[in-house]
Image (cartoon, rainbow, N blue to C red; front, top):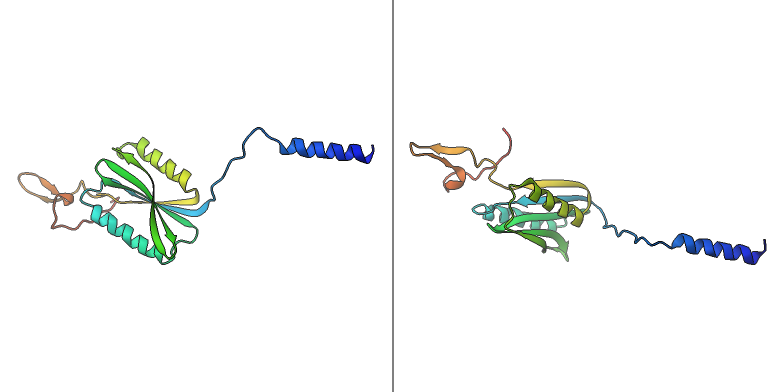
Amino acid sequence: MNKKTIITALLALVVFVSCSDEEEPIWEQQTEQTVIFFMPWSTNMTPYFEQNIADFETAIAGGLLKNERVIICISSTTSRANVIELRQKEGRCVRDTLGGYDHPDFTLAQIVTTMLNKVRAIAPARRYSLIVGSHGMGWLPVSKSRARSQYHFERDDVPQTRWFGG
């Protein structure tokens, strides 16, 4: 074989190997961790949720995040939930609204699963953390009277303590 044939064969090989009908997938850069705040049903708990978010914003503005992302799903009204990302920009924390849900029914596993899968697509990470804000003890009565039991979310004179488990 002469040099011209070898060079032509190598060029043809490079062209055929580099061509493809399939598009290459575009991968988001994966972070170390994505923290998800899930705050459904924020009627009388909205001030507590907003305080929690404000505290986290202060920490983010101070440089807390290194290779992490913070995503919040919060019901802003009884008929609307927003998905928001908190991130540091120029020494302060900014909120970016990434999307939302109209009339979300967070009692359905399918709705929660869809929301978590969207967060996973938006903010790929090696690890995920989930922080849930809700009336975790809302079914436990704080007082009993002859008429009926009262729950902590029905009264303003009892702690708004919440927990899961026994």
